[in-house]
Image (cartoon, rainbow, N blue to C red; front, top):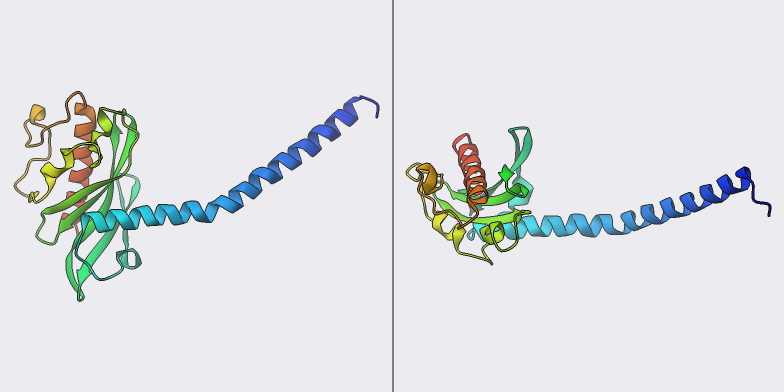
Length: 186
């Protein structure tokens, strides 16, 4: 085979088609498992923040647009009676970018628990918003948000910030407050 422009373009085209086919095949193989893992993570977060319910909150999900983002609200019921909501909320103000939380709020307006769904905060500092890494989120549990100022103490609020992670702590408060404002609007 002679090395000319036509042959080189033909070989490059074949290589590109094979590579594109391989990438497409891998995508098709991994698309459903990734989606299933994401649903499982969301369902586990709902169970973590709303421990008592017998319905399928994912089947009754309410979607609202808040600050240009889609927010999902999962009603938790026992025997058909509403116990509260698990609200998937966010803050774009994290040190490492967007933080996504699941906040469980009882029908009376008290926080049951908060679970981190996604974060990219600094390991060893901002990632202490995760329950497995510190007790930061415990200070929110049982607090009625009508009486609790969702701001770090440095800003005149009631929240003890994570040492050396004030930006992350503020973003966490922002996300929890967004969930509470959604709750008030229901």
